[in-house]
Amino acid sequence: MKKWLAFPLLAIFLTLGACSQDEGKEGSGNETEEGLEPLEERATVVIAEDGAASGAGFYIANEMGYFEDYNIEVEFATFSNSDEMLPAIAAGEVDVAGGISTASFFNSIAQGIDVRMIADKGHNTPGSSYFTFVIREDLQDEIVDYEDFKGRTIAVSSRNAVDDYIFGEMLSHAGLTRDDVEFVLMSDFGNMLAAMGNQSIDAALQIEPLITQGESQDLHVRYKDATDYAPEAQIAMVLGSPKFLTEERDVAQRFMAAYLKGVRDYNNAFIKETGDLDRVIEIMTEYTALKDPELWKKVGVTGLNPNGRMFVEDIKNQYEVYKENGAIKGEVDFDQAVDTSLVEEVLDLIGEYE
Image (tube, rainbow, N blue to C red; front, side, top):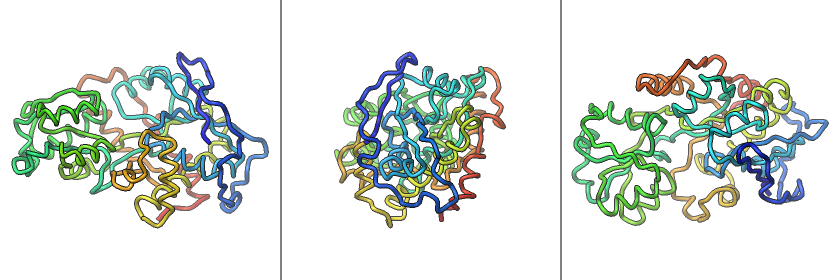
């Protein structure tokens, strides 16, 4: 069972009663196989996560008992916004969190908020991207190639964030500029479905499960795939507290090992189709807003690297795009902000996933 904490204005409130620490945990039985013994003293790791599908590694590791194997208990915390979350990570009040590439995120780091990007938490999978363009169902004969987006009305959920970055990469791939299309800022993905229905937009950068939902309602169809033009777009990252990564390195290593085991179960189920799909879907329906097990079998799932590695060069490229747009104030030291050492240490112990 999961334990959630809420942090409005950084005050800590327990939102759901804690269950027995062993309840529902299956345990891997592999406590020492890779040379990482369980901790002698039980440790609690606080994760800032809001039920996003990209948190699958956390959820699966928790329910499968991988954290328990190392004598780690996790608590899930929610924040009203990232302006509260990032200082809490920097201060060590939160150990691990999920972050998305935005100009605001980079500005926080440039202005002295010390958080580290440590592992992959979301990218597109070739051919079945979970974050990709859709076009109106009635426009399939008119929008055939990317250049056919010229003159079209396109909805995107944000400016100077990864959504906007992917939009720009698509335009470049099409040989178009932003002046060639009508950009519509639409922050609510659900509103994009309604806009498709009333034909006020022609295309949208949409996200699962709304991509699949819109297809089932004959509102839109997937348009090719985002990996055609942004094959290594880093959409989300696991963030780590500097305190957690240095002062609690033994806990951090075991936490990352458990996380990667959870991600590997996820990949075995959804990508390789060799794992226990029903069990993984059961966990995902418990932790996320998508409660329909059958829909989980149809959606394009979030890409999660079973070896934890990020597309670091793409993170830097996104930063440079936001900077060129005038949205970045200050400089980010990527040698400090991106720390891949924990993942590499753990891979040396648990081995590479193939």
